[in-house]
Image 1: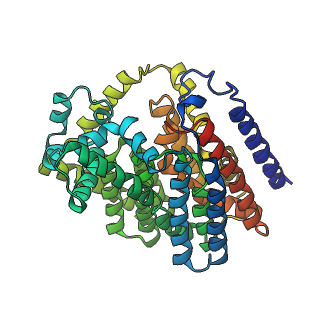
Image 2: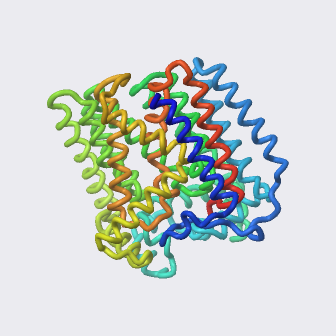
Image 3: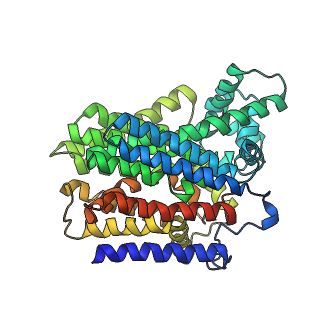
Length: 463
């Protein structure tokens, strides 16, 4: 009975959230610091409503292929990746501006700073060796000041690839071609995470659950609406690869893989400090899946791998990750007016959790809570005692980010990286509760999610 009640709850919450969106009720916006506000009708060009039909057709056809050929792993995963790509582009096209909608957003909002810097052809050597000097000479750089060098470096590498394909001597020409390259290629890169997602979920659960985890990932508001940001394009892939390496290290008791997981932790932090939670989560996975003494030796080797990379980058590039982190957090606290008070921490921690739930999609948020509750209960139907605790690790990670991350909202973008792992546990939770109606319940859930994505696109959107 409790499982059937969940289906009623997720539908009820979805309808309530749709009501808030459609009637623009200030249910969330009255909370101080809530980041996302309703779009004014005049702020967006006339939407191409006619695209909703083809978009729905693409979704239905793609899902039909996945369900029909789910036993053929490579085909099913390829379809999921392409389905994610075309849904992402199609939802972006609902603005009514085609690919220009992506390019305008890329060049005028948020992280446009990185694109403009990359278009100026900065030296890769300067970025890797003298990042602090670049910031000192350009005090107007806000986003760049809160990041490690790897983020800017990724934009510059994209520019170098664009230049190799189609060179341009003018700044405007480079920006035009770079923005086109990013708009077309990055969305595809964003959904490559589905392949390692499958690999991890199959090890933890089974083939069917692994495929359904990928299906769920395609119908999450933040994944589909946060466009052309590395938080959505690259960070989930980094997180999943690191966690997958740690998981494999524990399962096969490989010292080399344990060190490799630590190396990936450092590389992740070289690109974004938002990924700092990957460090404790990867160590937890080694301890959880390891046996006997290897648990602690593997965890120690993972930490050693991270610090070896720290020393290597310091020796080769004079890059001090700890100094960069301290400077970035200091700038972040000043910019966001962060007050280190208990009341502020609790208030914004709760706000972050609410925002994350809304942008994860309330149906999936409920399923995630159910998976955590199931893990804390008797664990009936769990594949193993070890896998049972994965949702708890996820919940602890989300809680730490909410209350220790010194962030006032905008977690819809910042926490996308952990969503692939959450999708895996949700997929298994649905199967655990509805083993004989698994496909039907997944379709029911993503149907609610899809409506939420479309309504958020037209009424709220990511900006």
